[in-house]
Amino acid sequence: MFRPEAESASEPARRSLQGRALHELVAHLARSRSEFWRDHLAAVDPDEIRSVDDLPALPFNQKSDLRDAYPWGMLAVPRSSTIRAHASSGTSGKPTIVAYTARDIGIFAEVVARSIVCAGGLADDVLHVAYGYGLFTGGLGLHYGGERLGATVIPASGGNVELQLQLLTDLQAHGLACTPSFGMLLAERAAAAGIRDLSLRYLICGAEPWSEGMRTKLEAAWTQLSRQPVIARDIYGLSEVIGPGVAMECAESPGSLHVFDDHFLPEVLDPSTGSRVPDGQRGELVLTTITKEAQPVVRYRTGDVTSLRRGTCTCGRTHPRIARIEGRTDDMLIIRGVNVFPREIETVILEAEELNGAYAMVVDRRETLAALEIHAEVAAPSVPSGLADRLGRDLTSRLRVTPRVVLHPQGALPRTAVGKVQRVYHRDDATDPLGLDDPDDDC
Ligand code: DLL
Image 1 (cartoon, helix red, strand yellow):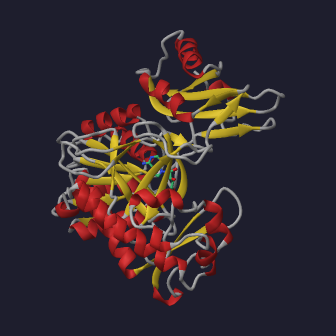
Image 2: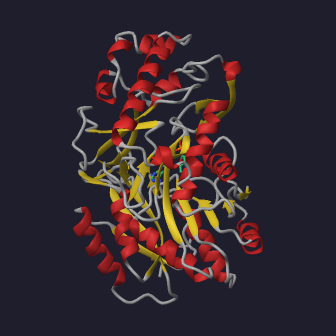
Image 3: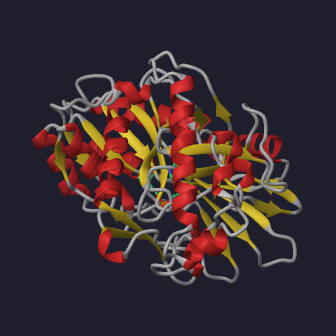
């Protein structure tokens, strides 16, 4: 552990620290210089907020608060006390700005350092960071966390696959931090280039949803390229809360992520009623930052779907854990009245050994009733006959809608070398949204 006294603190010690921090935060915001916060908490008596059990008495923050308060309206300190701002691009309109004091940046670096250690990272390691550097929190977040740990950080950023592979080979990185889709792309290209004997031990993947099937493919692909087994671990975070490092899978317990709750308090709610669901039940993750100075959030509705569980992990960490993010409350597709989550499609695609894991969905809205196409790449030059039909049947039984399955040769589908992968495309006219001009490309 990077900070054992915090990561393995007892439940009573943790609760007492959280209660105090929450009270101080609410008291500070209610009388802050920010009109936003004074209005937002006008109906709250800070003296009544003394424990995490009092969280439900607080109103929610949501993405629109940040948008409406653009750029500095949610600052709880003078702008001159901040030392950095990041931005996250919304689906429409203005970006949302998130600002940090020097102390916030210190906490950001610490939780990312903890995360790297969760994946098995060591102070002696070379850490290759292939998340984008810039307004996105991924690159600089992993960078400062790696430095905080004492690792040698390679700020490779996204894109430029050949240079990335050369650096991974020459500098013999032990850790690679990137989106899972970029990790897959790098592994494919490294295999094609005949790269072997890397020193990699772990991947730190996040920023977009990915499944257990993708983990299996990533670990197998990188283990082939390295002198030792490579594990892929999931890092979760969002700019509104801090960036990466809100929660992290440890090496011992794949499938659940430790939430660093001495800084971020998690709740899981029924998105339609806003009330808490019992531990273990799935719902929307809501987060409160109890130590952030510049731009805290109180009960922020993340839109991410997960479940919460408590208890000490075999690794010794006592933080509550969230399940891997299943999707977003707003990324559900509605196809002929049936709700379809993109991750269910990924599960079927990655279970099929004949496919290489690259896939895309196209929602065809040219007719009144939307139709779903699933495009996937085959791993080998020849496709076993009947594969498209078999996948069609598997998908139909899982999704309860019948998609059209289109298979392509390796490398045909669009790849994302910078930023987050795009899995869902829309077809509204004759233009092919995947940019595959030649329909004979299909296998
Ligand atoms: O994606 C921060 C980050 C950078 C996380 C690098 C991990 C690694 P945003 O751009 O604000 O911040 O996007 C946040 O991305 O609400 C989730 O929907 C999604 N997301 C982030 N991590 C994961 C993950 C960064 N591990 C939004 N699994 C979040 C699934 C994730 N979805």
